[in-house]
Image (cartoon, rainbow over all chains, first blue to last red; front, side, top):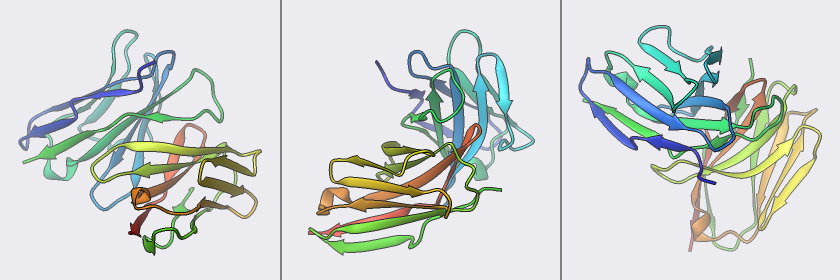
Length: 115
Length: 110
């Protein structure tokens, strides 16, 4: 059973471009979470999705950021008009289809650099 | 609002020493607590998961305890090795999301 997969692993964008980060959850997992790790800071929750639904987006910046988890295919975190402050490691995690104390399994992350 | 604190931010010990990493959290209404390891520039490796109803979990040289009422957890590492050098993150889960501490960067000197 493959783990959580993220691609690309490294992404370089110029200011003003769009960044698309992909996350494929573990097989059988239908819950996806995105976290961001800024330099010298801890990981911060961004958004929690189930298939075709955004459940909790309380950690998402109000502008330029969006996330989706379609019925088919990976979850996508999209950042429009990137700025230097968006440079960070973005981690995706997944968990089984149940609420409560299930473990979240993390992917290797995508490191976004904005030049 | 849940806050997770890990102090100190960095720790250096000689090889072979037993050590304890501390984690505290402000809201005891949690589902579980996880300890992770992160190597520089890498992803997160889950070390131990303690459910809110449990008191401790063990894996090899690692033992994690949880005192939910006082908002504390400890990660005990026995007989530390240079390969244990990494950043150790504590995270608590309430509802949908994990709230992380900033981590403790451990250096084990040969």
